[in-house]
Image (cartoon, rainbow, N blue to C red; front, side, top):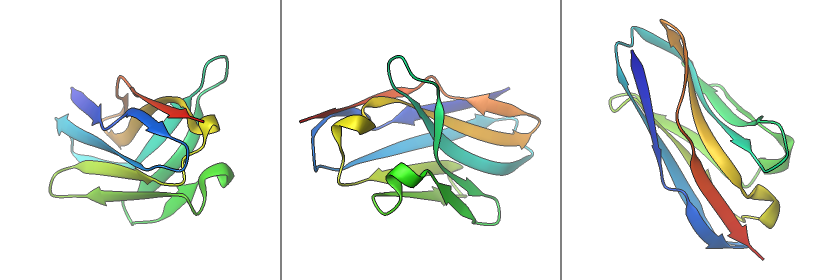
Amino acid sequence: QVQLVESGGGLVQAGGSLRLSCAASGRIFSINAMGWYRQAPGKQRELVAEITSGGTTNYAESVKGRFTISRDDAKITVYLQMGSLKPEDTAVYYCNANTVPGDYWGKGTLVTVSS
């Protein structure tokens, strides 16, 4: 069993910054990639950013230049540094880990950006 615990969400004004963290634990043999997804009310879940085991990063067009994904392999933790936040970034942010033995999700953390 693998657990993902997110933290760092909250309320921030437009233009502000937040950093999300996601710590993985459990029976993890290897990690192929970790990433952040978000789901706004009435919308489908979408990829925000991901980072592979080789360090390759991928970002949604809407967050390029504003968000940065990084990881700490020793802590099995992935971070999402979010800057220049906009009201449209408001969503529940979910951590995802594509691992051996499987694909796992956190419970989500709410980010609210006020205008």
